[in-house]
Image (spheres, rainbow, N blue to C red):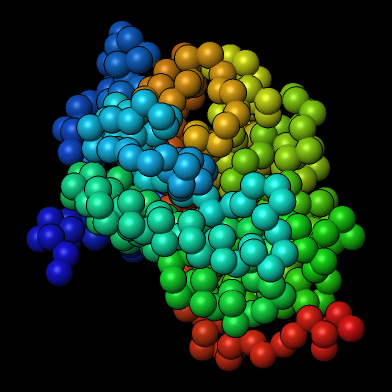
Amino acid sequence: MADLQDDLHTAAEVGRADEPYPQEAVVVGPEEYRPVSDPDDAPLDRARAVLAAHPVCDGYSGLPWTLRGLPWYDLDLGESAVDADLPRLRRGQVGAVFWSLHLPDGHDGGRALTTTLEQLDLAQGVVAAHDAGLRPARTAGEVVDARNCGRVAVLFGPAGAPALGDSLSVLRSLHALGVRVLTLTGTSWAGPAGLSRFGEEVVREMNRLGMVADLSYASAPTIRRALVVSKAPVLFTRSGARDLRPHPANLPDDLLAAVGEAKGLCLVPLTAEQAGPTVRDVADHLDHVRTVAGPECVGLSGTYDTGGAHPQELCDPSCYPRLIAELLRRGWEESDVALLTWGNVQRVLRATAFTAHTAQQRRKPSTATIATLDG
């Protein structure tokens, strides 16, 4: 049974799926929100105040795979072997995080599904063992519920498409187990040439289920076709602006503009390799994506616990206020910051659920196979 206070702020679930997340519906977390209208406030203080009302939805964390290699850990008290324990998540005012189920190189093929399920089992066990600070979430409403109760919402995914083994039945099983994001790369049906007929059927079935398509690291033909086929918003869990930094996962301006037109969401990674070595470089990417795709189409992806180097002053999730302070210094409106940190991810989750509800009235579970569609 949900806590009584979970029924507060029910306006967060009201409205059309394509509307931006309404500011009046943003849920205030355990810290009391204080007005931030005083222009003389220091940017860091203003950043913390904004985040108290509009916490960070972190779009990518590699924590499950990191924990897999540790003999013992305690996320409640703090764990030096990881980037994102609960004390640092709280200091950074993180309200929700996506836990990646991606596999390292060399784990494709027959072992992909088994290893993905092992990671999911571990992730669910970690959340259950730290239920004073973490709560599993599958929908936008459950994310809000977790925030209302002072916990960090954990969403499971993205998982890698090789885990499907070219089976839509496996896709439905992963969804039933709680996976909510799937990355469309690394398969014969989502490769350099784009989506095959079976790949398009995968996207349609994901729409029917309410699973978000992640297109980071996908080829340009795959991205363009997915934007056409998908009726729900797509997600880029780790993509910056290629015009600022040439990286295969970063998006050129023409694709960023297409993402904006489709109301997708590009989550800029906080890695030195993709965004640059300083907090100002990350802010440059956020500025660029906001300008090209629009303020409703940009978000944050910490990519902590993935083994990569992070920009100066952004070494772990506790540093999010420093990034928000930099954006406020640049003249970002607090309403745009609220979309960046919280509202845009909520919009994608709500729109995906709305699309699934509509599709389920019109479409039965697909029985298509890769043999019949791709030959």
